[in-house]
Structure formats: structure tokens, C-alpha cells
Image 1 (tube, rainbow, N blue to C red):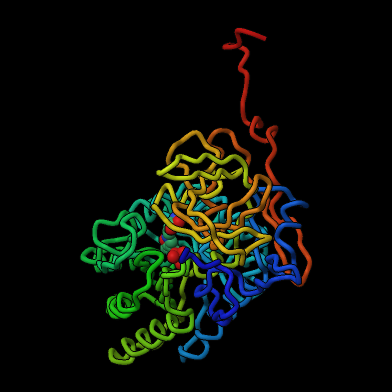
Image 2: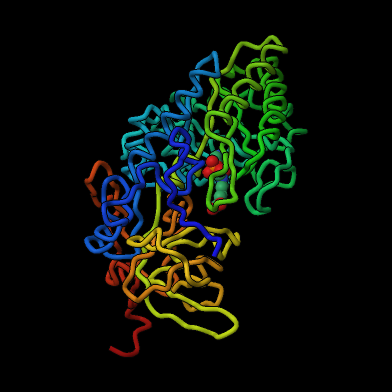
Length: 455
Ligand code: LLP
């Protein structure tokens, strides 16, 4: 069978998004998989399954790759921000802050996580197409830059900022009208997007904001989509953004930041071939530099907002194999102890993943199977058609590339508790998110006396 184990020793260690597995993946003397110096099957035994595993070294390498490339290819100042929607937790906020990153938050929850995790307010931007007053105020109070997405934001904020208070620090998001080839649900830069001001309305909004005495417009933002392998759309984006920068400065806004969003894709399966972080930054940085130079614009501080490419390949999920159902001539299902509640991406976007048995990654594959989750839904399939050695109940399956948009998109469908998360590094492991228990799931249920019939 053609399917190779996702573990392969020849990896592009300088750009973790180009490897299916974390960069520290290796085999122990018995051929069992280790990540961050920890044996995966032992982690499963110690912390139970399903288990999210995050490799600190992979995370660090991704941060270093962005930071160094920005320094190398952009002659002006720069600040990379972690798009925390990819995976929001105290430990990740803390780790990216320690690496000199800022952070992009889109809700009160993400904002609070970032602040408590140690990210300074001045290094956080708050996004969102329908921010609440609480979110706006929390951001304002902590000196967070608020990304104005629509007129509603402006009206709400104008009411919230105290008359004698500090001005609100703003960035303005617009829709650049750029198409790119990724899943329809995750494109945001085309014109019918719900995010940001239409390019045609930009001048009017900039003129309106110029009248404000409660805010300072420091930056411009655009984001074109996610899991993008093409580089050209980012060149086009730089041009549109430099034009907007020119217009905004002409109107008199002291724009110092240009935020080009995130979007760099990662390798989920063998056929995925995303550009490296270095290559992406080089293209983006040079394009912004050249577009500014040709318009004689002072260089802005360059910001970008990687999410997936920073954390996805640092993560994997461990499941325990349970029941099997063979439908002769049709397919064989192998069920695991998690599924669409801990990884909703396959059922939502028909996305693909790579996996192997944690203790036998290199065993010859013997059958093509379907890895099913345990939820009451036929579509709850984590991997369609994966070649594996025949396996027994109780064996540990490792699914790679789950560090982004898994935990952060998880649910309690079927009242299934959310998995724990551990971080690993140099042979040590530590719990970074505790496992939910059944009692946690009852925490918010109430028996109101007025409606109580049986007791
Ligand atoms: N900045 C903004 C304004 C964004 O909307 C996003 C992602 C990012 C940055 C980070 O993009 P990244 O570097 O991760 O591609 N749930 C989907 C992905 C949704 C992305 C939403 N916005 C998925 O699982 O594929």
C-alpha cells in the first residue's frame, strides 16, 4: 500500500509548517514514536485519551522563523502577532509573548486569555465584525488596539471612550477584493466578505474618523484567507494596502502600522507543499517595501497575523483505538475515543489529516480503513481511507497537524468532555489544559423550581 507513515526523518526543520509532524519527532530504540523527548504511548497512558499534545520546540521554531525572516527581509520595524483563534490558552499566550510576538484576539475570552497569559495590551489587537460593548471596553481599558471593522464599531466606541480619557488606539480593516484558492468558507478578502470596510467606502470612513477627538488611527489591516499555498495574492495585497496607506496619510492619519493578516498554509498530508515561513515573509516584506518605496511612503511597521502556520504542526492528537466494523467489499471502520467534538475540521471543511500507530509507525500497512469518531453522526469521520497495519483495540493512534483550529473549535456535542492538552519538551511533559469531566458538563445546567416536576 502506497501510504507512507507521516513520520519521516528528512524534514525541513527551519519551517515547521512544511512538516506533517512536530520537528522533534523521532523513534525510540524499539521504533516507537517520540515527540519532545516523550514517548507518545506513555503520554496517552499517563494523561488518558483523547489527548492534545503540543511540542514546545516546534512552536518556538515557528516563532523564530517568523521573527528572523521579518528582520532579514523587512528594513523597517515589524511585529508578528499570533492569531489566537487558532488555539487560545494561557500557556500559548505566554509562550508567544516570550518570543516577542503580539497577539490577535477576537473576543472577550481570547482577550482575557492573552492578558492573563502575559501579553502586554499594547501588543494586542482586537478583531471582530460584531464586537460587544464589554469587549470594546476591556480592550480600550488595557490599551489594546481595536480593529475597526464597520460603522457600528465606531458608533459604539465613540460612546464608550470617556470624554477626558486617553484616545482609543485604532486600526482599520478593509476588504481588499483579492481572490485566493482555498476552501470557500475560509476566504475573507473577497468583496462579499462580512469582514471590514468595502474598499470603495474607505476614503469616506477615513474622512469621518479624522473628525474624531476620541481616537487615533494608527494602522490599516486586511486579511485574505487561510490555508493559502499561493504567494501572488500577498503581492497583490501589498499593492492595495500601500495605496490605502497613501490615502490615509494624505487625509492626515498618523498611520504607522500595516497589518497584512495571516493565511500561510501548512502540510497536513504528503501531497501538501506549502511555502516556507521564510519564503512567505520574504514575499510579503519585499512587496510592502517596494510598494511603499515607489509611492515615496515612509515605511510602516509591518505586522502579520499567523495562526495555523505557527501552531498546527506543533500539535497532534492521541486517540485510543476501540471498536472495528468490517463491511466486506465496502470498507472497514476503526473507531476511536474522540472525533468531531475535538476535531470538527474534517466534517466542516472535508479536510484531510495524516496518522499512524504511535508504537508502530513504520510497520508495513496492511489495510485501508476509515477512522471514525464516537459521535452519533454518520459524518463523524476523522480520516477517510488511511492505510494502516491491522490494529487491535487499545492501540494508540496519533493524528498530526491538530495544533490549530482543533481545541479552539472543539465542542461538547453528545456531552462528550473536551480532551486535556499537554506540552512536551526535552523529555518533560506538563498538563496545560485539564481534561473536562462529566461533572464539568453539568456545571451550567439549572433545575428551576418553577418548572421542576420530578425530584
Ligand atoms: N487574521 C485574521 C483577521 C483572521 O481572520 C485569521 C483567520 C488569521 C489572521 C489567521 O489565519 P491563519 O494564519 O491561521 O490562516 N477554522 C478554519 C480557519 C479559519 C480562519 C479564520 N481567520 C480552519 O480550521 O481551517
